[in-house]
Image (cartoon, rainbow, N blue to C red; front, side):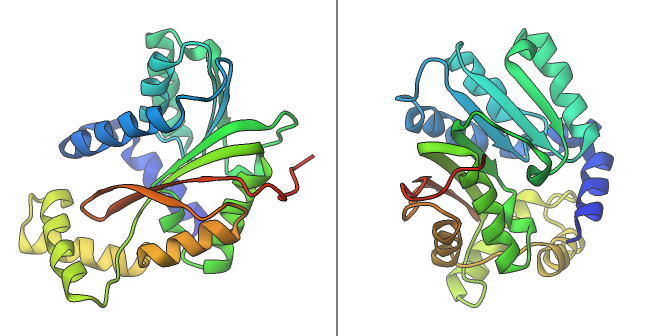
Length: 238
């Protein structure tokens, strides 16, 4: 999907985004809990880069767990970022956040980040080369031993078990509550706009983007999540 279309789509959904996806809240809660343990040995004043931050769910969770951390939210949808900004102000964490309206390549960072998150972002990058460059952009902004946690929809779409799981996933996530029409709309969107690849392919893309071999630590439905350290010989962005 083209960047402009992605941004416009999330601008339209911003005001009702969290309400629409409330059904998947338990999935996100479990993911955030595990991420907090992966990040638990970071410095007390760690700087966290959150790419495609959306309405800031992971930041709100981590900010409560780690009161000394600072977060940079990168989000191209101004409407989504505004929703997060309002929530950050309500929770009293806005002073610990930098709000960057735009894509990662427009973020200028001199001081490297200790860790980064990219939840359900790279799946929208359908060209493999561009997807690798996306992870390279994250690696460039991390310090030595910096940690990435990334999640994406993943599966071998040609395998019978994945096709079966896909039907279950569509019943969960379609707006029409699993109606045949809703499932068909989701199927068309996944074919057109989302690069759902086998988990091994996603790992390969992350590795070529400047990270050690990713470790899968979570799966719920089609959502797979990995963590990986920045490759030690990766040149940082200056």
